[in-house]
Length: 217
Image (cartoon, rainbow, N blue to C red):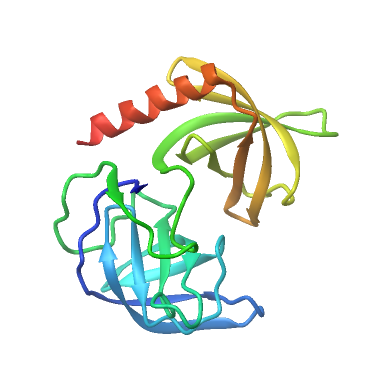
């Protein structure tokens, strides 16, 4: 069994998505939700050629926010035409409906595209990045976190594949981790994968993630 970051409700809502597709073409189309949560959604009826890591706009009624595409259903599968998205401006709640309290939710992925190795949780944690070959550190803010990585907001992101040392603050504790950039979105930030996490650091991460979950129950 896998885990989602929080429970999802099977609610169909009309939404409009817009952005730039994989070919660099601007798109805007009407789709619908298949399920929603406080921080994300599964969308159906998507025709635009988007890829995991893309940032798109999503509007519902008069509400609008930016979302990151986390997975894309593959053609010829039951998930064709579906995408999973995560709100990267979580202070903007766009769904005009009540939802269950947030927290981790067990589920079984339907396909290889609809899964994470570790559940991610929304957060606001300071990070100090030290890219290889660069003397000056870069300060940023992690807006989601898991045992395996995080997404760091930064206006001028690093290139995918960049290796770096990461100073990550968990409340009053600071972890020193190694990682690499796995995706990069100009104007938004970078997805970072943690490498060779020690047992002690993994324990500290797990304690912090559990504390976030308890606060939101």
